[in-house]
Length: 141
Image 1 (cartoon, helix red, strand yellow):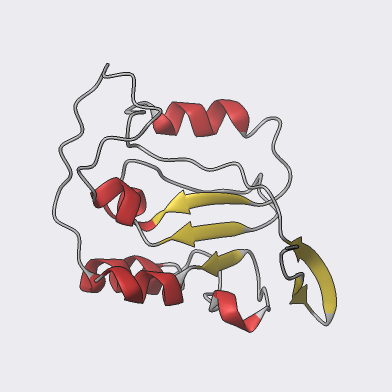
Image 2 (cartoon, one colour):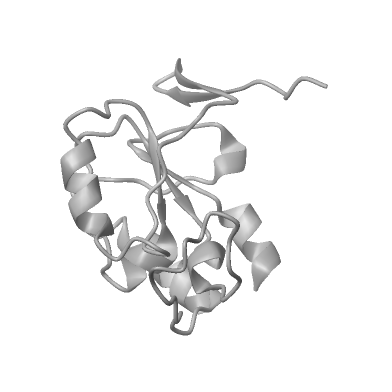
């Protein structure tokens, strides 16, 4: 079955079409994630995905001026202790606490001088550059 296509709009004009493959950045298994972002920012000009958990714990920091749009996920992956299939066992992941309040704090902070407006992913509108997975995040807490 084919995935449902959905458009995200800015000023009435479609700027992103789903489904899409996103470069994703996570500190889980990659403690040098900030360096990875800085290096790959030279070649990424479309949307990308970052973790609210990593934003909260300052494992990654903006500005993300290179990206067309920023998808912020729930942080559930980084907050989990489960070992992933791709885990080579070179690092030990010890997650810090993670709650819906912390997630909401990250999302609220995007509006404070960041130049990015927060919109729900279900709305299909990009007011500036940020799209959040708020509805998915609600299900993990």
